[in-house]
Image (cartoon, rainbow, N blue to C red):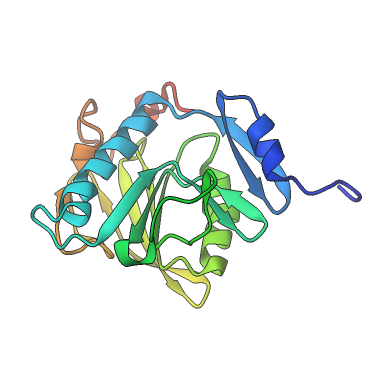
Length: 202
């Protein structure tokens, strides 16, 4: 809206605690806290990656991960569901509640209230900021899509479903079963109705 002041971090701090708040193109945008299926997926993914890539147990190490960090990209402030940095690029915790060093990988877990924003506005900002890798995971359809940044534009490099072992850059030093990300749901067949998995989605 013409004449409307851009949102600031003070607006983030003033947002209700039960909402996730972001600043996108100068506008404060909020959405509900994740559903159990969404939150469980983020937790399981973080566990899959932390052991080999952060602790070096069965993998190369050299990374550090955060779930729902606040990350500042110029005037935008985004909250990826999971983000990772090469350890040598992150000297320590930020002085404020948000990171200003861009991640080397982000993952958005899609849900009803966030999918359009994740696929369009946030993906554009991540790409323009030069984030090298992005994953999009839909726990309702049980799929993972992996992308690489090509001069600010995303190129899809692969997708996987619950029948698959995932080996996706930048974490292709290991593989893991995608079905492990939703342990309370049976694998969804290709011709199976996913509607039950949308229950409680937000």
